[in-house]
Length: 300
Image (cartoon, rainbow, N blue to C red; front, side, top):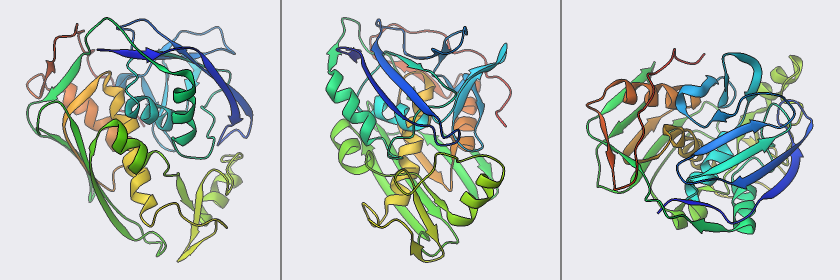
């Protein structure tokens, strides 16, 4: 059955790029409504958490409306991963700024909020999407792919290769379920290179970034005093991002995701390619379905 939150819950945190204090509120929602974001500081339309609402992927996954250029919400991927991993189908998300608070740079604090709010089963069966044939998108030597797999699950395989010796090559495979998400992925933090942080600061971005909400590396060194939470925390976080980005399908996927050096842009292009091919997917389960909208122009 579909699930929503038992009650509303709020928090306040720093925006990674604006450096502003931002308030976030998660509320229960009716069955069949999905995940919907609202800018509480604007008189603006709600924005569904859907692949076709993604308007930018350069530094994070950003959703918005073309009719209202200021109506945008950035850095949604860690919250979306927590909602996906905790089995939340329907929720209304209210935020009083242009980005979701980064908190500790992982999904752990969002999982904590969901646990505090509680989870309630609804009376409507869940609608899910089964992958019927392989769909792949490439960019240089990077790629993202969805292919058929065992029914009623999403499995993921991710590999990365960074020049910084502190990261290097890492790979991870995981069958997604709630216990595995909490144990293997939720704690993993976003990461960056020190030189990239300095470049972002120079153009007025990453104002809220710090060693308390991101792993920062320089060549072979981890600059965070507390070190890593796992030796392969980097690839775990890349998989966490994919879990959040793939939930923008609007429903759970049944299939296998494979990514190599994949990021938000390729993840979004993959969903657009999937839904552009009606032979590549079908509805699974007994829940009510809806028509997938035609894909829009690919995000920047």
